[in-house]
Structures are given as C-alpha cells and as structure tokens.
Length: 285
Image (cartoon, rainbow, N blue to C red; front, side, top):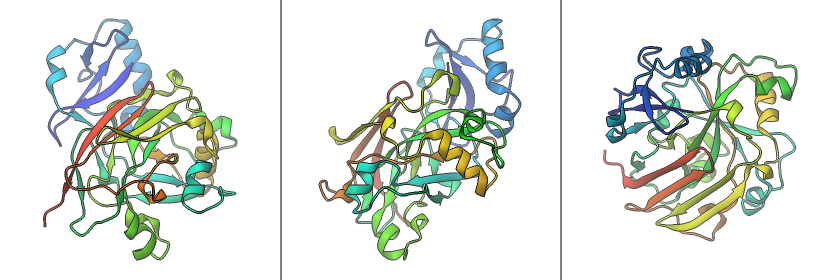
C-alpha cells in the first residue's frame, strides 16, 4: 500500500492506495499523514481498516494534485557523499563517517510542483535520493538493527542543490546551497518500511528526458540502518522527520552536464516507490 496526500497546496487530504491501485480516503482515521499519525501506529491502523473494508474508495481523487506524502516534518536531515562514485566525481574520497547537513523543512513540496531557482542561481543541480521517514522517536539507539524499527517508510526525494551557494558562498556550510524554497520535492507516496528492501532499490534521474543518474542503493557507503543509528547518537529524530540518504553519481557538479535552467524538466524515480516530475522556473522577487 501507499500513503498519499492529495489536494491543493495547504489543503491536502490523506489517502491510501491499496494493493489493487484503488485510492481510498483516510479521513476516518486521521486528518493528516504526519508525525502524530505515524507515532500512533497509523500504518498498522490503515492496514487493519483496509482489511475490514472500512475505507471508502474515491477514484475521483486521481485528478487531484499530489502533495508531499508527509506533512510538516520537524527536520530534514541529509547525508552527503554517501555513494563512492559520487564522492569521486566531487573530487573526494568516500567519508569515514557520514557527512551530515540540514535542509529547512519548508523546502518540502509536492513531487510534481515547480522547482524555483533563486533569482541569481547559475549552478542549481538535481539529486535523486532515497528518503527515510521516521515513525517513532529515535534517541541513542542501541544498534543499526534497532534503527530499522524506528523507520515508518520510504519516499522518493529530490535534494535540489545550488552548488555555488553550497561550495563557494558557504565557506563549507552546505545548508546554504540546500534551503531555497521548493528545493525538496517529495513523493508521490510513502511506502511502508516492511514492504521495501532499502538496500536493493534502483534510482534514476533525467533532465529534459536525457538520463543523468542510474544506480542502486546497494552502492551506499553507509546503509540506511547505519545512518539512522548514527544520527540518533547526535540528535533525537522525531516521528515524521525526513532523512535524505545521499545521491549517486551523475549530477551537474561532475562537470559532465549543464546545470539546471529555467524551463528544464527533471524526472526522478526509484523502483517500487514512484516517479516525480518537476518543471524548473526562475523565482521572482
């Protein structure tokens, strides 16, 4: 099953797509797919309601805008250089410990919403990533195995990045290049953790229909379990928080491709989790 939020921005409603592909309203269970819902066994309650036939079908919802599948994450925690080939194309060795930075939570938008380039941006880049959604508080977890129990599910995430801000303007403060509005399209759906092998997913990106990235989460330097466990030693991850787990090779930073321009189209996809498509626009002041 897939959890989704559909409707105009700021007025999304919760839905579940069942195993037959039918959209069903979750309004009888919750007003939102957020941290409180996930922490209160929302995924298990959704499965039970589906099995009991308690969720009405709403096929007309297929026409609605797709919003980000989680509402209002308190934190968006990101991992850099978590694929060896991407580290190499960036001119770095694979890190010995995870490289951590943050995005402002208001970067999160729907999977097909426009991405707005900052007015003076010349070096904005795409990054297909596996997103991890936390389902229960993760605090000083005992092991990577325990970390897997804290994960609610997985999503497709595009960690859009402005490389000049990230590298040259920032003085090493990566978040400066990561936090522009709309810089984290998310979705289309949250897929429960027990339906996904996070280390066996093919992920790809395209710009204007031309392939850019094509890799597998099997090539991660640090596994999802290791990342969530390690993060929990330094911070408390709350239900509904998002962890972006890094991107593979094939970004514009490599020098092999042009950076994003006004009018470009990005397509980001991960097998089993879905596809998202954004039109790139120049932000106006």
